[in-house]
Length: 340
Image (cartoon, rainbow, N blue to C red; front, side, top):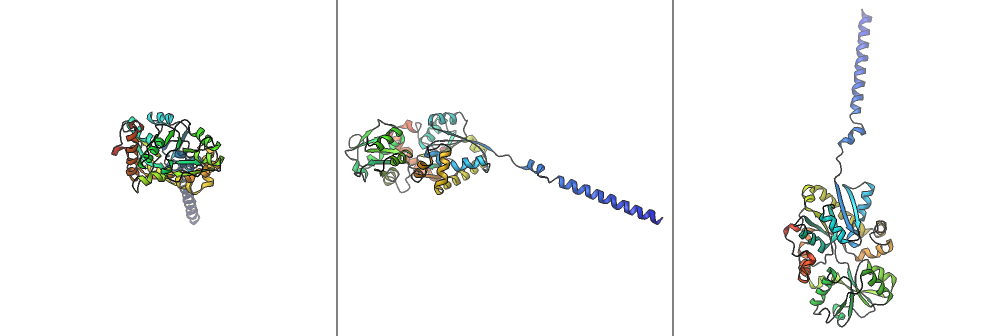
Protein backbone atom coordinates (compact mmCIF):
# COMPACT_ATOMS: atom_id res chain seq x y z
CA UNK A 1 0.00 0.00 0.00
CA UNK A 2 2.85 2.29 0.86
CA UNK A 3 4.58 1.46 -2.45
CA UNK A 4 1.41 2.28 -4.34
CA UNK A 5 1.19 5.66 -2.62
CA UNK A 6 4.86 6.31 -3.41
CA UNK A 7 4.33 5.37 -7.02
CA UNK A 8 1.36 7.73 -7.28
CA UNK A 9 3.40 10.60 -5.86
CA UNK A 10 6.26 9.94 -8.30
CA UNK A 11 3.80 9.71 -11.22
CA UNK A 12 2.08 12.94 -10.19
CA UNK A 13 5.45 14.66 -9.94
CA UNK A 14 6.46 13.45 -13.41
CA UNK A 15 3.16 14.69 -14.88
CA UNK A 16 3.61 18.07 -13.20
CA UNK A 17 7.14 18.39 -14.58
CA UNK A 18 5.91 17.43 -18.06
CA UNK A 19 3.17 20.04 -17.93
CA UNK A 20 5.58 22.68 -16.66
CA UNK A 21 8.06 21.89 -19.45
CA UNK A 22 5.28 22.15 -22.02
CA UNK A 23 4.13 25.48 -20.57
CA UNK A 24 7.65 26.91 -20.62
CA UNK A 25 8.15 25.72 -24.19
CA UNK A 26 4.89 27.36 -25.24
CA UNK A 27 5.83 30.56 -23.45
CA UNK A 28 9.16 30.63 -25.25
CA UNK A 29 7.45 30.16 -28.58
CA UNK A 30 5.37 33.30 -28.09
CA UNK A 31 8.44 35.55 -27.97
CA UNK A 32 10.50 34.14 -30.82
CA UNK A 33 12.00 36.74 -33.22
CA UNK A 34 9.88 35.30 -36.00
CA UNK A 35 6.68 36.22 -34.22
CA UNK A 36 7.76 39.66 -32.99
CA UNK A 37 8.44 40.83 -36.54
CA UNK A 38 4.72 40.89 -37.11
CA UNK A 39 4.52 43.73 -34.58
CA UNK A 40 6.91 46.02 -36.51
CA UNK A 41 5.07 48.93 -38.10
CA UNK A 42 5.64 49.16 -41.84
CA UNK A 43 7.54 52.26 -42.96
CA UNK A 44 5.57 54.96 -44.74
CA UNK A 45 6.63 55.32 -48.38
CA UNK A 46 7.51 58.73 -49.81
CA UNK A 47 8.43 59.66 -53.38
CA UNK A 48 11.08 62.39 -53.27
CA UNK A 49 12.61 64.24 -56.21
CA UNK A 50 15.36 66.81 -56.63
CA UNK A 51 17.22 68.60 -59.37
CA UNK A 52 20.91 68.05 -59.95
CA UNK A 53 22.92 70.99 -58.63
CA UNK A 54 22.77 72.97 -55.38
CA UNK A 55 19.06 72.33 -54.67
CA UNK A 56 19.73 68.59 -54.51
CA UNK A 57 23.09 68.64 -52.72
CA UNK A 58 21.69 68.76 -49.19
CA UNK A 59 19.81 65.50 -49.73
CA UNK A 60 22.73 63.16 -50.41
CA UNK A 61 23.24 61.77 -46.88
CA UNK A 62 19.54 60.97 -46.71
CA UNK A 63 19.77 59.16 -50.06
CA UNK A 64 22.75 57.18 -48.80
CA UNK A 65 21.06 56.30 -45.49
CA UNK A 66 17.93 55.21 -47.35
CA UNK A 67 19.98 52.77 -49.42
CA UNK A 68 21.42 51.39 -46.17
CA UNK A 69 17.91 50.97 -44.77
CA UNK A 70 18.51 53.19 -41.73
CA UNK A 71 15.96 55.94 -42.45
CA UNK A 72 12.64 56.44 -40.65
CA UNK A 73 10.72 56.25 -43.94
CA UNK A 74 10.95 54.18 -47.09
CA UNK A 75 12.10 56.75 -49.66
CA UNK A 76 12.04 56.49 -53.44
CA UNK A 77 14.43 59.15 -54.78
CA UNK A 78 14.37 60.60 -58.28
CA UNK A 79 17.10 62.98 -59.47
CA UNK A 80 16.53 65.05 -62.60
CA UNK A 81 18.20 67.74 -64.69
CA UNK A 82 15.07 69.30 -66.20
CA UNK A 83 12.87 71.59 -64.07
CA UNK A 84 10.06 71.21 -66.61
CA UNK A 85 10.11 67.42 -66.36
CA UNK A 86 10.12 67.60 -62.58
CA UNK A 87 7.24 70.09 -62.60
CA UNK A 88 5.20 67.69 -64.74
CA UNK A 89 5.68 64.84 -62.25
CA UNK A 90 4.70 67.08 -59.35
CA UNK A 91 1.56 68.33 -61.10
CA UNK A 92 0.56 64.75 -61.97
CA UNK A 93 0.97 63.72 -58.32
CA UNK A 94 3.78 61.23 -58.96
CA UNK A 95 6.07 63.04 -56.51
CA UNK A 96 5.18 63.64 -52.84
CA UNK A 97 8.09 65.91 -51.90
CA UNK A 98 10.59 67.77 -54.08
CA UNK A 99 13.51 70.18 -53.95
CA UNK A 100 12.91 72.88 -56.59
CA UNK A 101 13.88 76.46 -57.47
CA UNK A 102 12.02 78.89 -55.22
CA UNK A 103 10.13 80.60 -58.03
CA UNK A 104 8.98 77.19 -59.36
CA UNK A 105 7.52 76.40 -55.94
CA UNK A 106 5.10 79.31 -56.25
CA UNK A 107 4.43 78.58 -59.93
CA UNK A 108 3.34 75.07 -58.93
CA UNK A 109 1.19 76.36 -56.08
CA UNK A 110 -0.65 78.65 -58.49
CA UNK A 111 -0.91 76.08 -61.29
CA UNK A 112 -2.33 73.39 -59.00
CA UNK A 113 -4.67 75.87 -57.28
CA UNK A 114 -3.08 75.36 -53.89
CA UNK A 115 -2.31 71.63 -54.01
CA UNK A 116 1.41 72.21 -53.45
CA UNK A 117 2.92 73.89 -50.37
CA UNK A 118 6.35 75.26 -49.57
CA UNK A 119 7.76 73.42 -46.55
CA UNK A 120 11.23 74.92 -46.21
CA UNK A 121 13.98 76.90 -47.87
CA UNK A 122 16.92 74.62 -48.63
CA UNK A 123 19.25 76.85 -50.67
CA UNK A 124 20.11 80.52 -50.34
CA UNK A 125 22.14 82.50 -52.86
CA UNK A 126 24.29 80.55 -55.30
CA UNK A 127 25.02 83.50 -57.63
CA UNK A 128 28.41 85.17 -57.96
CA UNK A 129 29.85 87.83 -60.24
CA UNK A 130 33.18 86.56 -61.54
CA UNK A 131 35.91 88.65 -63.08
CA UNK A 132 39.02 87.80 -65.00
CA UNK A 133 40.81 90.83 -63.58
CA UNK A 134 40.86 93.18 -60.58
CA UNK A 135 38.67 96.14 -61.55
CA UNK A 136 35.39 95.29 -59.75
CA UNK A 137 35.09 95.62 -56.00
CA UNK A 138 31.56 97.05 -55.68
CA UNK A 139 28.34 97.18 -57.66
CA UNK A 140 29.16 100.78 -58.66
CA UNK A 141 32.32 99.53 -60.36
CA UNK A 142 30.10 97.83 -62.97
CA UNK A 143 29.11 101.16 -64.54
CA UNK A 144 30.11 101.26 -68.18
CA UNK A 145 30.88 97.53 -68.30
CA UNK A 146 29.24 94.48 -69.92
CA UNK A 147 28.12 91.61 -67.73
CA UNK A 148 27.60 88.24 -69.36
CA UNK A 149 24.64 86.43 -67.82
CA UNK A 150 22.61 83.33 -68.66
CA UNK A 151 18.85 83.02 -68.80
CA UNK A 152 17.10 86.23 -69.82
CA UNK A 153 13.89 86.52 -67.84
CA UNK A 154 14.99 83.96 -65.24
CA UNK A 155 15.42 84.50 -61.50
CA UNK A 156 19.16 85.39 -61.64
CA UNK A 157 18.40 88.02 -64.28
CA UNK A 158 15.69 89.69 -62.20
CA UNK A 159 17.66 89.51 -58.95
CA UNK A 160 20.72 91.06 -60.57
CA UNK A 161 18.74 93.80 -62.30
CA UNK A 162 17.07 94.65 -58.99
CA UNK A 163 20.47 94.97 -57.32
CA UNK A 164 21.68 97.26 -60.11
CA UNK A 165 18.61 99.51 -59.85
CA UNK A 166 18.88 99.75 -56.07
CA UNK A 167 22.46 100.90 -56.61
CA UNK A 168 21.29 103.60 -59.05
CA UNK A 169 22.49 101.76 -62.14
CA UNK A 170 20.12 101.31 -65.08
CA UNK A 171 20.36 97.87 -66.75
CA UNK A 172 21.31 98.01 -70.43
CA UNK A 173 22.13 101.68 -70.09
CA UNK A 174 24.70 102.03 -67.32
CA UNK A 175 25.49 98.30 -67.34
CA UNK A 176 25.07 96.20 -70.49
CA UNK A 177 23.68 92.68 -69.97
CA UNK A 178 24.70 90.07 -72.55
CA UNK A 179 22.58 86.89 -72.58
CA UNK A 180 24.31 85.18 -75.50
CA UNK A 181 25.75 82.18 -73.62
CA UNK A 182 24.17 79.60 -71.32
CA UNK A 183 25.74 78.54 -68.00
CA UNK A 184 28.20 75.86 -69.14
CA UNK A 185 29.28 77.75 -72.25
CA UNK A 186 29.64 80.98 -70.31
CA UNK A 187 31.79 79.30 -67.66
CA UNK A 188 34.01 77.85 -70.40
CA UNK A 189 34.28 81.22 -72.18
CA UNK A 190 35.25 82.94 -68.94
CA UNK A 191 37.86 80.29 -68.19
CA UNK A 192 39.27 80.65 -71.71
CA UNK A 193 39.48 84.43 -71.37
CA UNK A 194 36.89 85.09 -74.09
CA UNK A 195 34.79 87.13 -71.64
CA UNK A 196 35.97 89.13 -68.63
CA UNK A 197 32.86 89.47 -66.44
CA UNK A 198 30.15 86.87 -65.87
CA UNK A 199 27.26 86.25 -63.50
CA UNK A 200 27.13 82.52 -62.76
CA UNK A 201 25.56 80.13 -60.26
CA UNK A 202 27.29 77.26 -58.51
CA UNK A 203 28.71 74.83 -59.53
CA UNK A 204 29.67 76.75 -62.72
CA UNK A 205 31.48 79.28 -60.54
CA UNK A 206 33.72 76.54 -59.22
CA UNK A 207 34.36 74.87 -62.58
CA UNK A 208 35.41 78.18 -64.14
CA UNK A 209 37.74 79.04 -61.25
CA UNK A 210 39.32 75.58 -61.27
CA UNK A 211 40.17 75.99 -64.97
CA UNK A 212 41.63 79.49 -64.66
CA UNK A 213 43.39 80.65 -61.49
CA UNK A 214 43.10 84.30 -62.57
CA UNK A 215 39.31 84.26 -62.22
CA UNK A 216 38.07 85.60 -58.90
CA UNK A 217 34.77 86.21 -57.15
CA UNK A 218 34.31 89.96 -57.47
CA UNK A 219 30.82 90.17 -55.94
CA UNK A 220 28.79 87.77 -53.81
CA UNK A 221 25.25 88.41 -55.07
CA UNK A 222 23.76 87.04 -51.84
CA UNK A 223 25.61 89.70 -49.84
CA UNK A 224 24.61 92.41 -52.29
CA UNK A 225 20.97 91.33 -51.99
CA UNK A 226 21.13 91.48 -48.19
CA UNK A 227 22.71 94.95 -48.38
CA UNK A 228 19.69 96.39 -50.19
CA UNK A 229 17.03 94.48 -48.23
CA UNK A 230 16.43 94.66 -44.50
CA UNK A 231 18.65 92.79 -42.05
CA UNK A 232 16.56 89.63 -42.46
CA UNK A 233 16.73 89.75 -46.24
CA UNK A 234 17.86 86.49 -47.81
CA UNK A 235 18.17 85.52 -51.45
CA UNK A 236 16.26 82.25 -51.41
CA UNK A 237 17.07 80.17 -54.49
CA UNK A 238 15.84 76.68 -53.58
CA UNK A 239 12.96 75.21 -51.59
CA UNK A 240 11.33 71.98 -50.44
CA UNK A 241 7.71 71.54 -51.48
CA UNK A 242 5.09 68.93 -50.61
CA UNK A 243 1.77 67.78 -51.99
CA UNK A 244 -0.87 69.27 -49.70
CA UNK A 245 -2.83 66.01 -49.55
CA UNK A 246 0.27 64.08 -48.53
CA UNK A 247 1.06 66.63 -45.81
CA UNK A 248 -2.45 66.44 -44.40
CA UNK A 249 -2.63 62.64 -44.41
CA UNK A 250 0.94 61.89 -43.37
CA UNK A 251 1.95 64.65 -40.96
CA UNK A 252 4.17 62.43 -38.79
CA UNK A 253 5.91 61.02 -41.84
CA UNK A 254 6.51 64.51 -43.23
CA UNK A 255 7.90 65.69 -39.89
CA UNK A 256 10.24 62.67 -39.87
CA UNK A 257 11.43 63.51 -43.37
CA UNK A 258 12.09 67.14 -42.44
CA UNK A 259 14.10 66.05 -39.40
CA UNK A 260 16.16 63.59 -41.45
CA UNK A 261 16.58 66.11 -44.24
CA UNK A 262 17.87 68.80 -41.85
CA UNK A 263 20.38 66.29 -40.46
CA UNK A 264 21.49 65.54 -44.01
CA UNK A 265 22.02 69.27 -44.65
CA UNK A 266 24.17 69.54 -41.52
CA UNK A 267 26.22 66.54 -42.64
CA UNK A 268 26.87 68.04 -46.08
CA UNK A 269 28.02 71.35 -44.60
CA UNK A 270 30.22 69.76 -41.93
CA UNK A 271 31.68 66.66 -43.62
CA UNK A 272 32.94 68.18 -46.87
CA UNK A 273 35.08 65.26 -48.07
CA UNK A 274 32.49 62.56 -47.48
CA UNK A 275 29.62 64.72 -48.71
CA UNK A 276 31.52 65.58 -51.89
CA UNK A 277 32.01 61.89 -52.61
CA UNK A 278 28.28 61.25 -52.18
CA UNK A 279 27.34 64.23 -54.36
CA UNK A 280 29.52 62.78 -57.12
CA UNK A 281 28.27 59.24 -56.49
CA UNK A 282 24.68 60.23 -57.14
CA UNK A 283 25.54 62.45 -60.11
CA UNK A 284 24.31 65.68 -58.52
CA UNK A 285 27.59 67.37 -59.52
CA UNK A 286 30.17 66.12 -62.04
CA UNK A 287 32.84 65.01 -59.56
CA UNK A 288 33.95 65.15 -55.94
CA UNK A 289 36.62 67.81 -56.50
CA UNK A 290 34.08 70.28 -57.88
CA UNK A 291 31.59 69.34 -55.16
CA UNK A 292 34.08 69.91 -52.32
CA UNK A 293 34.93 73.41 -53.56
CA UNK A 294 31.30 74.26 -54.38
CA UNK A 295 29.67 73.25 -51.08
CA UNK A 296 30.90 76.24 -49.00
CA UNK A 297 29.63 78.64 -51.68
CA UNK A 298 26.27 76.96 -52.25
CA UNK A 299 24.52 78.20 -49.08
CA UNK A 300 22.81 74.88 -48.37
CA UNK A 301 20.42 75.44 -45.46
CA UNK A 302 17.27 74.23 -43.77
CA UNK A 303 14.82 76.99 -42.81
CA UNK A 304 11.18 76.21 -42.01
CA UNK A 305 8.57 77.89 -44.21
CA UNK A 306 7.13 80.06 -41.44
CA UNK A 307 10.58 81.35 -40.47
CA UNK A 308 11.47 82.00 -44.11
CA UNK A 309 8.13 83.59 -44.98
CA UNK A 310 9.14 87.28 -44.47
CA UNK A 311 12.15 87.18 -46.79
CA UNK A 312 10.38 84.89 -49.25
CA UNK A 313 7.57 87.41 -49.59
CA UNK A 314 10.09 90.16 -50.34
CA UNK A 315 11.79 87.94 -52.90
CA UNK A 316 8.54 87.02 -54.63
CA UNK A 317 7.45 90.65 -54.78
CA UNK A 318 10.66 91.53 -56.63
CA UNK A 319 10.10 88.73 -59.16
CA UNK A 320 6.44 89.73 -59.57
CA UNK A 321 7.46 93.34 -60.26
CA UNK A 322 9.61 92.19 -63.18
CA UNK A 323 7.41 89.43 -64.56
CA UNK A 324 4.27 88.05 -62.84
CA UNK A 325 4.53 84.85 -64.90
CA UNK A 326 7.85 84.06 -63.24
CA UNK A 327 5.94 83.05 -60.10
CA UNK A 328 2.77 81.79 -61.73
CA UNK A 329 0.86 85.06 -62.04
CA UNK A 330 0.20 85.97 -58.41
CA UNK A 331 1.80 86.18 -55.00
CA UNK A 332 1.36 83.40 -52.49
CA UNK A 333 -1.25 83.55 -49.73
CA UNK A 334 -1.16 81.97 -46.27
CA UNK A 335 -1.95 78.54 -47.67
CA UNK A 336 1.30 78.47 -49.62
CA UNK A 337 3.45 78.36 -46.49
CA UNK A 338 3.26 75.02 -44.69
CA UNK A 339 2.74 75.09 -40.92
CA UNK A 340 4.17 72.28 -38.81
